[in-house]
Image (cartoon, rainbow, N blue to C red; front, side):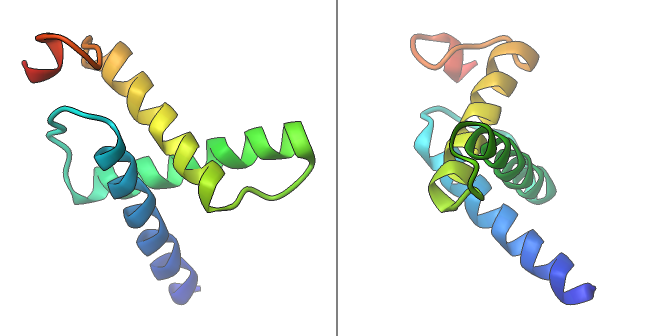
Amino acid sequence: MLALIVVLAIEGLVIGALARLALPGPDPMGFFATIGLGLAGSFIGGIISAVLWHRVAGFFFSLLGAILVLYLYRRFVQHRGLTGPAPRG
C-alpha cells in the first residue's frame, strides 16, 4: 500500500511538473499542489480516454488532462488568461 502511494505521488509530480512547463507564465504552486495537479490530470485524462476509446489513459492523456486542469485553474480561480499582461500579475 505504501509503495502504491509513493508511485502515485511520483507520477503526479512528473505529470504536474510537465503540465506547468507546457503552459507559459508563473505558477506559485507548491510541491503538494503540483502532485495534486498531476493526479487530477491523470484522473481527467482517464475519464476522457475511457469515454472516447474505452481504453485506459496513458502518459499522453494524463498530461493533456493536467494541462486542462491547470488552464481551468488559472482561468476561473486565479482569473487570468494565458497571454497578455494578465499571466504576469
